[in-house]
Image (cartoon, rainbow over all chains, first blue to last red; front, side, top):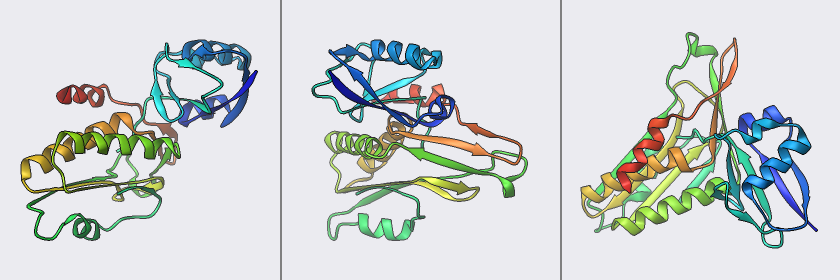
Length: 84
Length: 147
């Protein structure tokens, strides 16, 4: 069992009323699987919307990218970026 | 140099630091500014949020890719965060090289990728409402130019 740090940004952070949390996982899982677990546990279906993006340790990630809890420190979820 | 900061920047100072004596033949620079987005610009502002660590990492990757594609002498990216008002400067991208074609192309490339691949989010604030800016599909589309 390992603890992943999960962080949220922008509109998603406000909707979820949560900046970050620790989430215990016991095996590697995909970004999509993590989203589904979090959406269920936090009762936040917004996380499952297609537009919501993810990052694993600061790199943009896709739904089928694997999160190995032994190696990954932080997973982020956020809406599409709007800088510049 | 890559900087994510609250304070304003001086284009003149950044321009001077881009120039490499005897080598720089071209400098291309882009400055993004806050324009009116409401009927009441004096009372309007926006807040730029970022993801500390990831934003800098994204920008470093974008600049590295630009340096891989073109022969550049120096690159500076400065992006402000926090509360900004109409007429404020938001972002500076500057590129120096021996010839103009590389400088123009690299500056354009970096801005295109910054818009879609750097972790910043804008929220517009007016007396009536606060609203997160939606990403434009045209920004994502413009990346196809560089594939």
